[in-house]
Length: 138
Image (cartoon, rainbow, N blue to C red; front, side, top):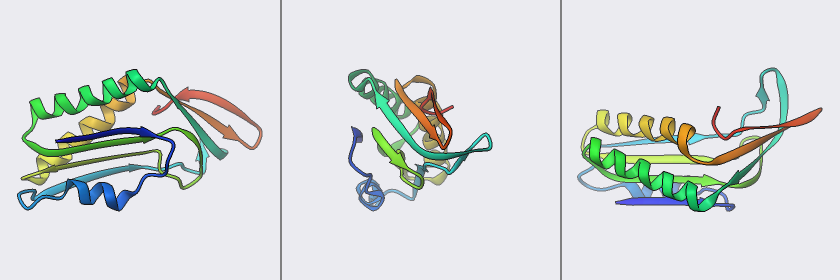
């Protein structure tokens, strides 16, 4: 079972975790990406995310399908935000539940690492002295 979403609305971390909970899930792994205050020694004011939403959702669903083919997981949630996000905001969350923790860990790591490389989401880093477009997950 999957829950894949791109939205400009804030991510409700507890609701995401609760969705993945099952009596048969002995492990739930959660990755939460946050907007940090510094990049390469420069103070970050905010990040701005844009997505080619149709293609991004297709790629995110493919990640979930790949996970289901490789590991015996119960649930996979991948949510990513778009728009302007201040320092401390959450642009991405991935939650994986499985019977065993090792499976949940491995599948969650695969999800974020693959998302970084394949999903068409871009971010603009806005600094005190300028801005720069980069891949959503360098």
